[in-house]
Length: 509
Image 1 (cartoon, rainbow, N blue to C red):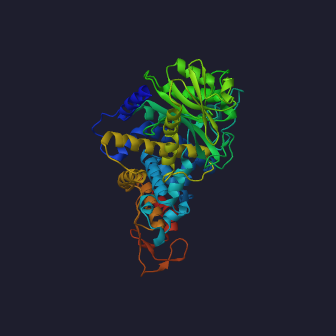
Image 2 (image 1 turned 90 degrees about the vertical axis):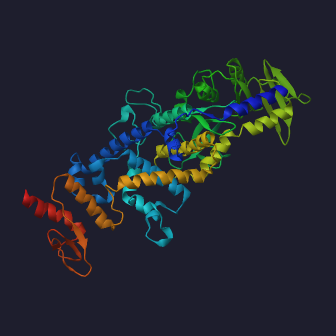
Image 3 (image 1 turned 45 degrees about the horizontal axis):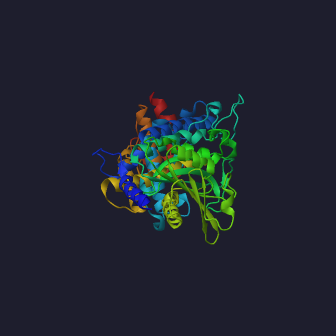
């Protein structure tokens, strides 16, 4: 016991360390961007632009640029995509708006652009509704090499490709999660106590990788195995579980169970040769796994199920409180039900129970942080659930790093508000090139078309609304109060582009 308490003191001292020596990091947003790095954003930008291009080709044909620039589908803001494409600034603004929507929740997304005073908010000044929807549709991850060229191939869970070789069903989000995990490990030094447990990302759609766990608050969803620091609850490593269809990509050895392979994969990133105490629950635990961890030099504390393989037979009999198997101690605890604690070092029964109950909460506490103003929303695209999970996890980890590095304390909502405020300030300057948020929606669309025509070297026309002067439109012959200033004619905003393209621009060529 004295040895264990001294270990705990050293553990506490070594936990609160971060690998950040850059004095240029001054605000909360920069800590967030350390984890959600440029490499991840560039991956999202590239794949989203490719996916949007495929959608445009399917809908408007190979010559989709001409159709979009003439305003035939302006409601989706596709012509703005043709002009500048999806940029890192757009992706960051989308993320900031999602975080804001998690803090200030309305019944549905359309309410954020409602003109009623009840729903008045800053979102309306940041980005138009239709352009936000376009970004939400366009966000994408890499396609499998055997399925490229089809943007409607949503059967990601298929396990065989055209040449009958097995395909990892996680291929779409695998690179994204790997890059996130690398960043999480890059800027944090893990403490002595670590916890391994599963987290469920809620999903109601159809997918063969979905799990049903009745004891969880969200019973249906994707299972992600997490490795967290037991003291600070920092997420250090994660592994997406594809279920039965992808078990061959999880197992390290045919003789191992999936649970053993998950634990060994998660701790494979620990290359500093420190003696750590690993905590996990009965789903992962087994005698064979504890033997492997003992050989690798790890301390291990867990609980065993009554039907665990290789369990000492006498421990289930009355009158026996403990049993040894090699260097593994199995302790019986009699409470409301019989619980079998197992460890590979000598410790008192009550102390073992207390340590396990305290240190095994790392992942559970991290899950609680994720639920605070979560940015998750309903979607039919399963990979977008994982995208938003990664963003939420990056925010929580950035908050922990910021607190350890600066000594300041934040609530989760306060930290998210700081990130949103910084994103909106940056994007407001960037978006001033493309958006005229003080105009009506029709004039806003007209301003975008003007800019496209101006970039193409076409004569720019101005339009204004004169309520006291009402005459017939030059093109459709309906009454209007809008006037083209340069041509001095009455014209509807909807008729403006067609009229000038057909009657003015062509005549001047």
